[in-house]
Length: 623
Image (cartoon, rainbow, N blue to C red; front, side, top):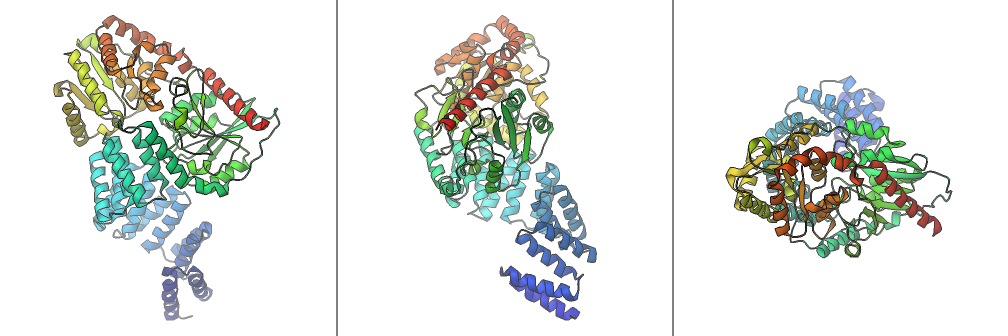
C-alpha cells in the first residue's frame, strides 16, 4: 500500500469512525497496518477505537506505538492521556497531557483534559490555570466554563465560581450539570432559595440525573418553609424515578445462617478522608469487635489522605470503588458475601444509592451522613436515637425502619485536640458569640435571634466563620445579609476557613459561647465547640436535622443549653454571657465531660451499633 493509498484509506476509515461505524473503521485501520505496521495515524486511531469499545489496555499499547513512531504529534499524546484518565492513571495522564500542550499550546482539548486530571489529583491551582488556558482558546464553550467554575470553587474563589457557572448556563441554557453545580455553590454561600431553584432546573432538564435530585433533597433541609411531609414526598418521588426501575437487577441473597461465623459489615462512603463522616467513623472502625464482625470498607475516595490511611488500618478488607460503575460495585458486594451493607452518605455528595437500589446485601442500612430517609423501599433500616428522632413522630416520614441507639446516634472521639485557651471575654472584657457552621444553615430566623441576643448583650460581638467566606466578595455579600437581619455591622466579624483542621479547632479559642443554627443544626461544629470548652446553645426542632444539637447536648449532660422556643434560646445565651465564672469553669471541664460521656465513648456506641446489627441479622435468619 502506497503512502497515498494509506492516507486515502485513513480518510475513509475516519468517515466511518465519525459516523459511529467502529467495526468498519477498525477493519480499514488494520488493513493499513498490515501494509505499514508502524503507520502512526492508523495506530493512534485504532487505539481510539479500542478505547471506545472498552479495550483500554489495547488502546494504551497502540497509542504508545504511535508515539514511538512519531513523537512530535500533540494529538497522539492527548489521546493517550485521555485513555490513561479513563483507567484512573492520573499521574501518567498528566505527563502525557503536559507533553501535548508543550507540542501544541493551541489544543483546547488538551488543556481541558489536563485541567480535569489535575483537579482529580487535588492540584487545584494548576487545574485552574489549565482551564483558564482552555477558556482563552474557546471563551464560550460551556463544558470548559463549568469545569473552570468547579476548579475556582476548590481554590476558595466562590464569587468567580458562581460567575462562571452562570456563564456556562448562558452559553448552554439546557446544561443540567452546570445548574446543579451552581446550586451546590449557592448553598455554600447561604443562598438556599437560589440553590433549590438551580437544582430543580437541573432535575427538570435532565430527569435521569440522580445527582440533581439528591442535591435538591439535601438543599430542601435548609429551607425553613419546607415541611416534613413535602420533603418526604420528594424523597419517595426520587426513589420511584431512580431506584425502583432497578428492581429487576435485584437477586435473592441467601443469608449465612451459621451463628458462629463473623458477620460481614460493609461501609460505603466517599468520605473516608479528612471529612466529618470520616472522623466520626474512625473510632467506630477501631472499636469493632473483630471476634464477631468482619469489617469491609467500600471506599469511593479519589484523593486519599492520612485519615484514609488510618481507616485502612482499621478495616479487615478495603475495596477501592472510586471510578467503578454502580452495577459493578453491587456485584463486588455480592462476591464478598456482605451480610449488612451500610450507606454513610444518603443524598449527599456523589452518593452510591444506586448500588443499594440493586439490593446486593441481605440487610441494608443508612447511617450518619444524611439527616433523613433515603426514600428507598430496599433500604431496611436507618440508625438514629430517641432524641434526634422522637418515637411516634418521625416514623411516618421514613421508608426505613428506625433503629434508635440507646446512647446516641454517633460518637465523637478525636485523637489529637489543641490545648484549651481561656475564654476571650476574660481578657477582652466582652463576650464573643460564634457560629462556625456552613452558611446554608444560617437561616434568616437564626440570624434574627442572634441579633436579639446581641441587643440583650450590648457590648458582645458575633464571629461567623465558614469555608465559603474565604474571599472578600463573598464576605461582603454575607455581611450585608446579616446586617439586614438586624446584626450591627460594628459588632460582626466574618472569616473564611483556616489552613488546617487543627487551626480550625484552635479558632474556638476566640469564642465564648457557640450559637447553634436552625432549622438545620450543626453536628460536627457542635462536637468541636464542646471539645474546645465552648458551651453551645441549641434550639430543638421537630425533625432530625433540627434535633441533632439536642441529642448531642443531652448525651454529655448539658440539657440546660437546649432551648424549647426562640425566647428560651435568647434567655439561655444571655444567662451564659452574664456568668463569667461559669464560662471559665466550663472552659476547663467541658472537654472531659464530653470525652467521658456516651458521646465520647467509642466502645459504648460501637457496642450499641453491633447489638443493632445482631438483631437485624437475627430477624433475617428467623424469617
